[in-house]
Image 1 (cartoon, rainbow, N blue to C red):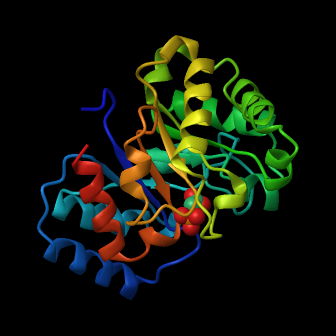
Image 2 (tube, protein in one colour; image 1 turned 30 degrees about the horizontal axis):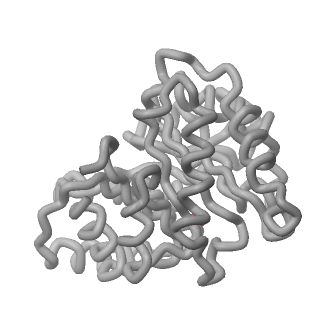
Length: 250
Ligand code: PGA
């Protein structure tokens, strides 16, 4: 039995139409399962309300966002505030996904502002870290992860630390079909837990990067892996369900 509750989190990225969403939930509700883990989905912003409604009816899934603004409100065309997310009932927000870091140039300092803003507004935060292939091959994995944690989580409000989850996602494993071995993943998870001195034992640390039904059990068997952040395999109800079943067996 794990100390921490297993979380299976689907990151839908910029995917899924309304028809696909409806099919996904029809499939999910057809498959009766005894859910004993947290199952969360982060759709595109615009789909959060509809997913909240469906999730409420099915009582199965927590809904959150893939990103948020670092600003409170004002003239920031195209951005979405933490206030607006809280207003529509988002339960969590993913911050610092490697696509935000690499495509949108988000730095640890900027992400730190977002993390603090979200926590202050009582949103749970999944803060993502992870090294590139080049960084891994040059032996920099631990240094990279350390600075992402130290800079991105600097000065977070002590009273809100229980709202924080971490996702370790090696960039070279995201969407590539290559998963870190469970030993490689566990080594970084244990290292991260060591860095989080104050909440070592309570903080949920997810693994992400090509997680699928065939590799989830081995990953979840590791002592410091408390769930998964899943892209591709979360888009298909049958795969997502398998992942939730694996999460419920821990
Ligand atoms: P993947 O994506 O499961 O498709 O590798 C994971 C992620 O980006 O969070």
